[in-house]
Amino acid sequence: MIRKITRILISAALLSAVPLTQAQEADFPQGPVRIIVPYGAGGSADILARAVSDRLTQLWGQTVIVENKPGGIGTIGIMSVVKSKADGYTLVSVPVSDLAVNPHLYKKRPFDVLRDLDPVSQVGSVPNVLIVNPALGVKTTADLLALAKKSEQTLTYGSPGVGSQAHLAAEVFARKHDLTLTHIPYNSVSAAITDVAGGHVDLMFAQLPSALGFIQGKTVSLLGIAAQQRSPLLPEVPTLTESTGQDYGDFISWSGFMAPASTPIAIREKIARDIRHVMDTTDLKQVLASSGTLGIGSTPQELATTIRNDYEHYGRIIADLNLVLD
Image 1: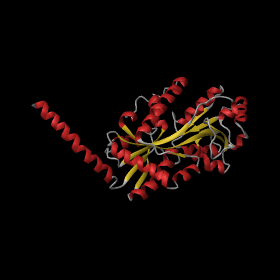
Image 2: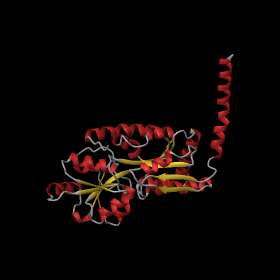
Image 3: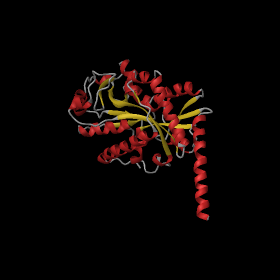
Image 4: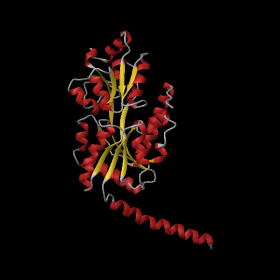
């Protein structure tokens, strides 16, 4: 009898959960939604969050607010989301580095992104590009390599932080060519690029959308694309592999929306469908493409697969580089 009652209670609970989940999905959102960017302005996670938030605000009739909370290599912003209520009203826009790179580098962070956050949607992806200060007088990657090997002073490179994808790309590049480069980490992509343009740093790898204005303004020089394929936006610019004959792999920066762990799957799927809807029915994809960004709008399940694949990919790179940061 006890077992029978238990089965009945479990069945009733499961049945009652269905309309509740459906109601949650149908009603969402009923108020403002926050998207936390755990880095400063100007990075791909920030650019994508702001582009999507504008369209979701129009679709939902509710304000979608983007907040930058930089610090601690993403820790401050991510922790604020981890501690938030798991109801879909607080999301975090994070780059691939936080989801697939940093877990290999930082073992003492106060959270585990794969445990404490749930996937919502991969929003978009961009290639990293190699840029230099024009005063270096180099026009090609081969020119840069020649300068780096004969220069009396060690060349410097910027990045948005230790362990960032830009940092890894520069280290792979340097080791492929037996170069010694000095790393200058910053708190944001825009700050690092500004210092490359100002001549305070010699070079860096940066996401194309973040660097595009500087490239077009000719305050930095673009040498190559750090991916296997050229950018449709700049088809005349060769990949690094084309320029040097070395295989660097892909350094594609993508950003995804994540929610606090235990956020109902119905809510996450609703947000993902709406992101895909605005990608397909508004000018969003075209706007993103004009900056060198591929708009995606994946399902939570597809994002989970992407995270797993890149987690393994960057784990191998970090092991090869023997990078340990804590």
